[in-house]
Length: 127
Length: 107
Image 1 (cartoon, each protein chain N blue to C red):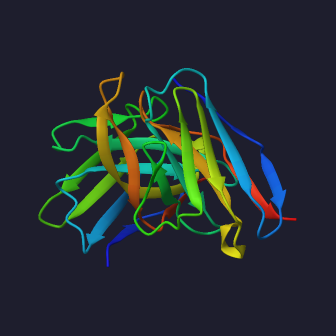
Image 2 (cartoon, each protein chain N blue to C red):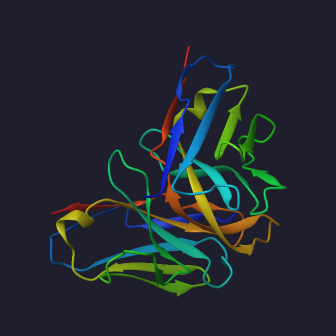
Image 3 (cartoon, chains in turn green, blue):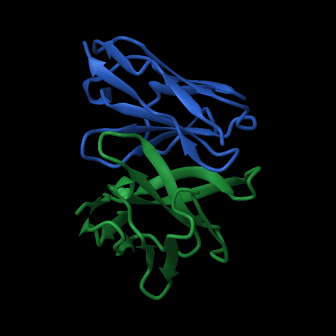
């Protein structure tokens, strides 16, 4: 059974840092364009960051660019999201998800749909 | 950035009825670069439809998608009790953006 297991969520003060990890079980993550998608409480979904399929490029939403960094550890079959300079508006459940790439978008980023999702990790930014 | 507007915001129907959910893009998403997801409380989203009309693995055939360009529709032909949830559309022609969701509730 394929599972994506997210960990590392918690409560952090504004301006602080947190690192999320996503481990693949029954699925090797490295060949895929893994991404992070977040959902603020009671709100909709927002793509945050992701890799290209080859893993040699990473992409970010404007709302997190310069503050968040996505990385992966092939040996551990994990994808991580380092979140710095956190703000109250970053409070959300963060999902890791596998992106099936169908197209290179007009923004020159991988375009596709998310077929596997992790269970989510709650990040709360509050003093 | 392409903005996806889903309507209605809430849809109240009874089991056995037909549900029609709309997703409209602020500009063309580029043919059929659109997916639909179902999300139940406390759960991660679940892929239903990709490429505007292709059902994901294991999705019952009562779910169908249609449309292209800027106007897309998700249809559930005959509602089952487990279908009451929130539904999101997502485009992938220009970056990756989601609609605001339609809540399908029991009438």
